[in-house]
Length: 200
Image (cartoon, rainbow, N blue to C red; front, side, top):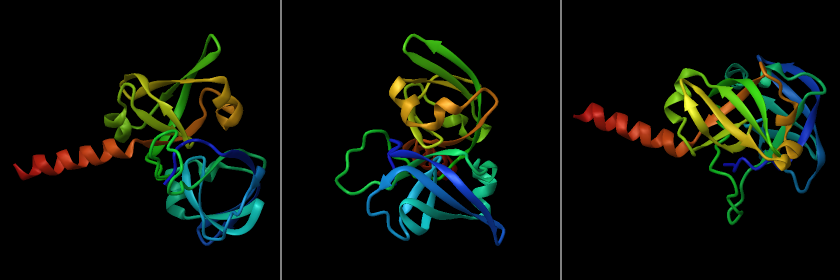
């Protein structure tokens, strides 16, 4: 479980095909203390497992399923990524509950300056539309953001200068694809309502 508050960014040092999947070697921009073998880490919002390394440099293995459902397959050497380690019991939940299970790949439509802030407008795939709720939460490349101006699968978020400095979202340009994860609470509510409708 994660919060969508990015701990640091990093770069892809190596991409190695492996049994239908991929092994990524990543170098974090700063040391990740006590990073352990088998630990979960979100890479651009996708929950992956540390398979070797420690500190700043480590590897993760990416399954074929994850490659199909996320933007991870498009990562090349030198690409910047958002990194967040799993939430520990007792940590502050500064963003929202993020599982690291990407629901779909969206696209950045437009970037509009708004004073000190910057507005990003995204387009989401249709399965995510029911979870785009005004003032609700969404994870974009692992970053916890507040949704507004939802219409026909498009939504906006407002990015403060701190978020632009601390994440890779400042690197994005219109047309870029991003990983999207809807709020898990909304997904569970929708699933319960669906079961209830079927039971009638």
